[in-house]
Length: 266
Image (cartoon, one colour):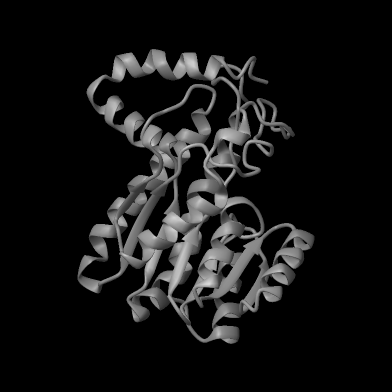
């Protein structure tokens, strides 16, 4: 990946930030985007301190114009686009009968349409480079989770899009990777939306036993180099996908009991 130009949406925190450091450490030129200008600037400075070539762009993935500007500024600065990592995402925590529909729409706009817009803008340039389109999905894109209806729905949609795109890009030699982390240490649970759209501001799970964002990034990097199609992370993640195919009714009960251990949803 040396000298490859890698765009990472939502690259100023969590898995996105870890990916910026991982690809950058391997010699890639990094473009990070996000809505928080201060967090972007701090991450850019941290990357530059490691002698990583980086460009930060304040952009909202839900806005087509911002995605077009992201491409224009990347080409002006680095001259090409080799890899797009659709990482920007948000979660939610509320049962469907209680959640406001607007919350689900907001999750879908960021997690699904954000990837659609970014990929649409970057794809012509990635085709030229025979590069990669990567989507950071989730085990929740294989197994619907209670109190995560909007999040699971967005990840199922993302995986369907990536699978379709993978088939379309076969003859163009463009690599498409669907990466599915299990629970990973990041701030996504702290920023989850509650039933009325307010920010949760805490995590319902014990973060210390989860895979680190850095380890997740290392595995995604290796899968990119090997041009893998699907990456399912952790033993528990693989087991969840396997059991859900064979015993869906059993898994309905298991995931509900699992979510109940988080306590009352907001």
